Length: 295
Image (cartoon, rainbow, N blue to C red):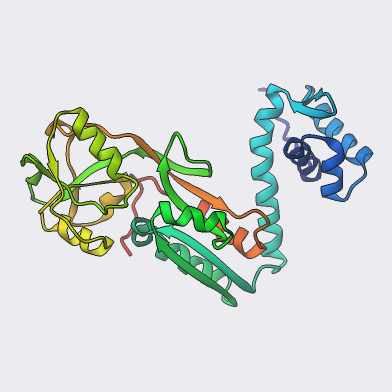
């Protein structure tokens, strides 16, 4: 039988490699890491020797990545971040402080409660602020530095954060309701919902007329309206966890919808406490096939 030898990657060397890739050169990377250029260069050579293949290429005064380097960069970023999170937790460096968590309203109920509970249990001396809104309003707040850790629901083709889950939008209706057979099709969606333009375009392309009998703009009211069987709604697959909602089957004739993702954003220079919160969020299983208790 072949002998499988386990090799360990050097986190320090990976950190230097990631810094060089992100800074575009050894000089700036060395300055950011508070190391000498020769030390950073030696760590890069160590990685290349370990993999027995080049990871960077010289491009004028800067550097580029080989195909193998591009592959390693994704792993390297995650490994360095996990290393830092583990160190901070074990050394109790992130037990105090305040962190602001932004999350869309439709993610709070199925997932937000458990994330908040796990965070408070792990860091009882910390303080967490919750901003629950819609992605379109949350992202500008994040960009302005008002939010440390952000979850969003965005089109898969345009989301720029770390994608934690992806899948097509789903048509929902209240249990035992056949309101989806009506024409015009009654829809219940918030006027500023990121899913609404997607649903409208799909219906219009399919030649299906629709109307909006739901006039409020509150997520809890919307849930009640759909649960009562008065309209259909479109959302991510995990919303099937709402006990009064069921997915409208494909054979019902409503058009398929685009793929969306759940994305995680962490503010640049975020505190160790914020990094810990991000780690807890990464542990959440957003797969709708996985059992999740409605909070």
